Length: 208
Image 1 (cartoon, rainbow, N blue to C red):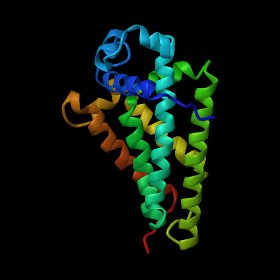
Image 2 (image 1 turned 180 degrees about the vertical axis):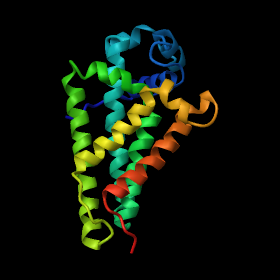
Image 3 (image 1 turned 90 degrees about the vertical axis):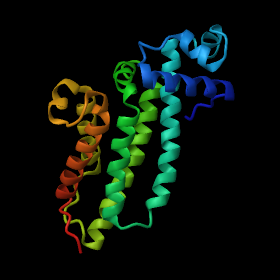
């Protein structure tokens, strides 16, 4: 079920997300958020209960916004050739995972005991899986794809590869060019290039 947020809550969440993206969850205090949002510190407790619960609301808000943006994105590519659509789908997922990388540690922890987060993620994953399946079938029908891997396996491959690079910087940075501060940007490029080769190989892609 989609949770409704008030304008004030959205304002606080938007501010919190920007700060957490720069400083991390632990490095961002409630006072930092309240100061930037121009509100009293007590308002965080009033609207969300605690900093941790605010993060849970922020994640739910972000998933909802991502689902909305994905619906718009899917609409823009629906008339394209299957190979173009598949490439854009892979790029979309990888970009979202790297862009909102600061959520991943929190999500792993919260999913153990927060049911609505599981439901939000499940709904989004199912939507994306159905889109991958639809594009794969169109590619088979048009003759550019010759294999039809299970869509959930492709999604697992994409998400798993991106999360590995995000969570294992000490290892993966050995294979990523550039300076440390550019790690996420360069890692995203490397992961995307690798995934496109793997996904299209798995699909048996053969250009007409």
